[in-house]
Amino acid sequence: MQLASVLAIYGLFSLWAETYLFGLLTWFDPNLFLLSALLLILHWRGPEGYFIAAGFGLLADVYSSTPFGTYALAFFLVSFPARWYAVKIFQDAMVTLPVVVGVFSLVSNGVVYLVLYLFFGENRFSWFWLNELIGRDALPLAALSAPLFLALLWLEDRLRIRLSMRKF
Image (cartoon, rainbow, N blue to C red; front, side, top):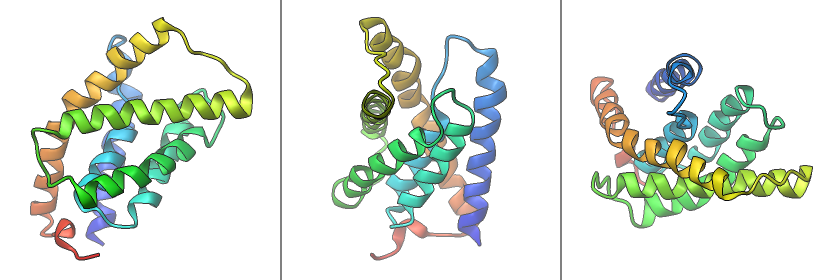
């Protein structure tokens, strides 16, 4: 029940920020759906993270111009190495969190590019696209990762759940 509450709060915040808040800022375009999925996977480390990532990917698909299912597939595929990293290496370290989120953001966008290229024949790669990807998506996601991770910890404490301490 509490997991559903946290997912609903994170999902509604991501939806509001993606559609309204970041629509006002044309120079700032992070993918909060990816950030929410990554933070939940990195902190909770449960096997449900794969489906959470796919759900946030479907939300991202609804608000993007890419073919439906592209982001869901990309988030789902990125959730496997993210969960492996969370279980084997990551220990809720705030110091490395922005770097980890930035790297997984680039990997996710690389998977989206590969899906679009292999299945739909779209070739968007250019140096301008790569600079936009790093400057408008990866770096802002890295900067937003620490405050949203602290918000996740606050929600976990407020709702009195300790999902990160489960044994798998």
